Image (cartoon, rainbow, N blue to C red; front, side):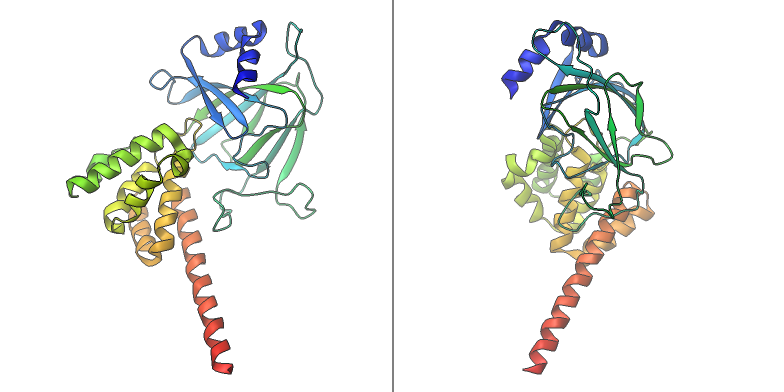
Length: 309
């Protein structure tokens, strides 16, 4: 797929768009079914962000075709559909109903315990999601608004061609990660493990669980009071397209499965101290509490079954 992307980027009109939006100092982030072109770290503005999204045939911006991502740190985001890229043409081709925008506005929704993102089924008549088919040539439109519109959403290429989108988003003001404040009281080895974890979250994002399982296991062997404050701090990591804060979220959830009560208590304490984003705190606590109640229910069923034998 990368070889096709190179051909796409080599088209004169695509190259002109990339230069206009990003200049020469950009990088390509590969997602499961999309490519994101962004300015390199240290060059990109922290608040006003311009990017290009290139979707292969039937590609999508989430991890799976039936998932949406949450955009808790985004104040607003606007998309312009530039069009498809066809061989032998001198510009983007206009295509009707080429992009599916799947969205849900309620940030209080909680995804299934074992699924990090809200999932949708377009054939479900009772679906909570809104579905819009958009066409290239339309005026730019918002996929996220400050009132919560599009808090969860996903973009899907409905065509069998490569589709190019231009994105402008404004990020909410957010505190910077200060990891060292949570490491000073730890043993050197534990502090080193957490520093490495943070570096790899930035480097790999949610690919961390595939790239370095040894490190993930090392973190999981640490006592919850030692690791959770640092993991909560990592939730403030800017998302540059690799789902970095969601990776810290997944690590906390793994800790919650192993130590549910301790994890919930620490999360509530950190929330009171404003030591993690409230959205993530509510999601994590809800998931772990549901897991605890599920375990109690299952144990009760087993006990009742044994008493009848």
